[in-house]
Image (cartoon, rainbow, N blue to C red):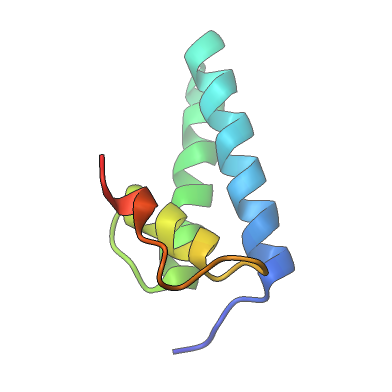
Length: 75
């Protein structure tokens, strides 16, 4: 599997989080479509099938992430 560059992952995470806030405030179809597109891209970039797993996987690939730290998985 190809690995996305950490800068790309950071950008995608930031876009998704911003769009999630906009969707919560606005709820427009355009924002929802863009959010779905970014979620799909994150899933492809991380080799996952859902956005929650993609966000966790992306954050674990960022510089400074500790691979043994699975605290994001417990909720």
